[in-house]
Length: 485
Image (cartoon, rainbow, N blue to C red; front, side, top):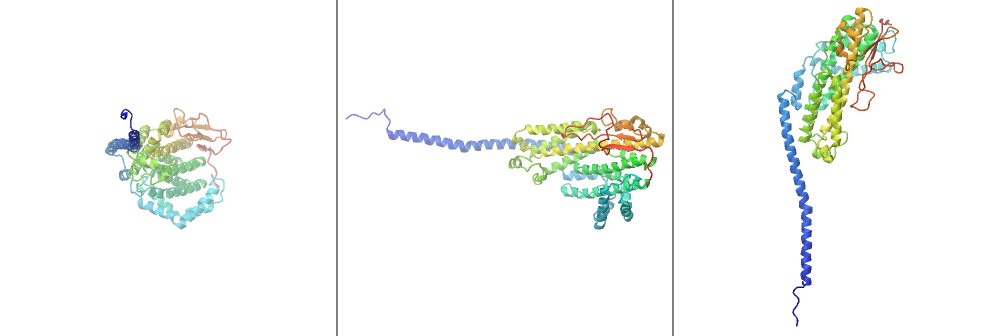
């Protein structure tokens, strides 16, 4: 009997070896499929945590530096910063004024007057308007209210409003009353101009300027946008008084001085950005996703996971620092750089991968408001320069019995020509028309372009008013005062 060939594996042995091999492969596969992702996730988690630790240390260092400079870094220090630059003078008067603005009888009466005036604007002298008697009755019935306003604004101070910078609703609560008071002063001023009442017109215009000035130290962008709106209403009424030649030389000089006393647009913007930085940084101390209105789109899960942490906060600090460095003492010169910085930030964000974008989702919401605010501040600066030029031109007419031919001639009435140059060496235009009317023309650098980063170039010739006789940034000043009705 022959012995078995030991070189040939037994079939059962071969099957066992194959089974062990398959089991080993399966085991390693399971290990790779379970452990490797965990290792990768763990490594990513450690990397991200390390990244946040470094960013958090950088944030701490930056905040300590800002605090050492006396700058606000959160809601508490922002309140201190705001209180330091404002006064409680007239607090009770402002509270009383607000109470009356919100009282049902006054609000109803004011609403009726505003509706009547909105339907047909109060015109220049010599042109009747339907709401004349109704407006006069409103002014007579509330004479004590207007005396209270005179008393409150006579001090010409930066008044403090009652706000809690941890609660944005307390900021919004002030806006409606501020807007309504501005509209009340506008009605009084234009009604007085229509009737040639220089004393009442001057007082209302002066109060309007002081009211806008009183809000200059508010440390939030949105508050400044309201202030700019209030100031714009006053400047329009000043323009009407110049067209009608309502005010005498001393009253004109007083208004010019009041406008000159306003904080520069650059200073106001810097103050607003400083306050906005503290307000934004304080939000990082809470649930930054609690208010979804801050975001253009509802934050997704990735953004909620990666955003709002130290890297996001550091990115916000960097952005504010760039904007503040770009603000000097002349907003007209600074605006292109500010808009370019904001534009570059938006483009840089688009170039990041989806994870990096999510990591900066909160700080990314800061750029659009800054862009829009710069445009609003810039337009406000141009309107100021236009009105100051027009006041000086009317003063010049009173003193010299003729119109100035160039802006440089306005030095005779105390206006520095350089202070009204919108850009370079191009001043706002002064053009005497054939009928003897002086056309004082400026321009709005923020219109005609859809892109935030583009501004309208400075024009060199007066605008064509044929198609749009009521064009903004134009004030017509007649040679002689118009006859009162």
